[in-house]
Length: 290
Image (cartoon, rainbow, N blue to C red; front, side):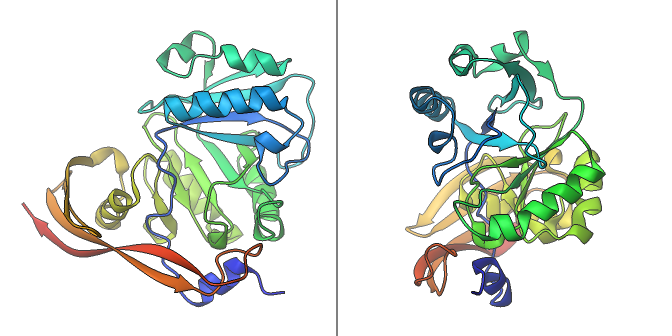
């Protein structure tokens, strides 16, 4: 069997604009098995999982199941919340699933959680969602954990398994996160060094989290020249047509960028869905200084 991520890489399918749009994160440790629906299809109490998903949606957080790369099962499990727009990820522990329902999902989380001292690295290892996340991502998570022990977690579905292995680098001290695709072991040191320095790696970037796909494309274009996300701001986004936008960015220089969405049939969207499906790709048509 040919894997979807291998085929996507061979045909050069663009990755830009495929990060998730939620502006924050909620992570819940669940060391047992995950079904296709991740946290909702795990040993976590199902009513709690449904309530957490609703709360996360309202708070604009991406809810993910996490577990250590070696899948150890602690007595008290970890949780983390990174509120929308925050530069800090707050961590804590819970013994009972219902304890999670009392967690504040905004800046008040600082009153009950401990701030992370360094970046957090999430590697999508959700094998029940796609085989690529087992075959390619699990060895990568183990290698990254050796590089930064204690800062690495396997996580549930982040989207875009045809770009596996996928790493979400969550910095400490600056908002947002960077989602990378097609990461191999040889690139891990560069991912870590860039994250710790407040930079991104444009060549592996799927997009910065917390923005719609067309804005991700514009920011990725800007990062190619100056890869420091904290130095860029989105000033304006205007539709120029059903599949086009004019986006104004301010940073070391200010730019107006024309971005278009192009849809085409890709032959294999995922290992679980080997039939062709329409996929939307985003491209910067022009970039003009202001």
